[in-house]
Amino acid sequence: MGQTVDFYYDLISPFAHVALARLAELPSGVDIRPVPVLLGPILSHWGQKGPAEITAKRLHTYRLAVFLGQQSGLEMRFPPRHPFNSLAAMRILAGGKADLAIVRRAFDFIFLEGRAPDNEDDLAAFAAYLGLPVSLAQEDDSKAALRANTDQAIAAGVFGVPSFGLSTNEMTAGVGVEMFWGVDAMPMLKARLNDSGFFARDPYEALVSIEIGVKRKI
Image (tube, rainbow, N blue to C red; front, side, top):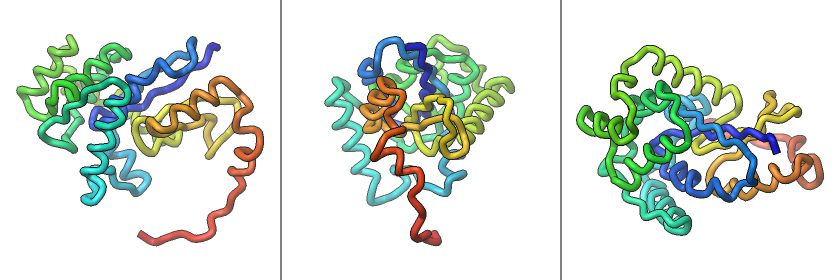
């Protein structure tokens, strides 16, 4: 099909771990390109909180992630701390230009082995688990790559992880990318990949012209 989908992820997201297990549901021939980003700056840009930062939503989020993981054949084990600081680990992935196989191992370290790579010992173990040098976490090129990925993600319209960005010839929200957020959007992404005109017909076509009726001040 010759289509490329950018898979935006941060290791902090258990749902990105589930999404990786479900990539086989997408049409064959689609190239999935992993893009490591930092969720914190993305949330700050759009004025949001992560689900685990909302007290009433935190336990529900963890239960849902485990449930969805089990439905996809994953036995998920959360690390002892969550949310955790994923910055150094994400720099390793960005600097190491991690492919999908390495990204899967990275998520296994956290949500299968149940370890948070947010301290010196666990970060070293994380890097060894992936076969990448831990020194990548401190290299300027790694820092710049992760920062550039995050800025590009925001410009493309990413507002959470996991997100799937499909480049198009049409302009949506000011950019030529259609964004699909979350595991539950994967069936819609599959439908769109199989049908280039999926959103060009009613009832989807009319959605872009809906006006904002009221804005809350938060």
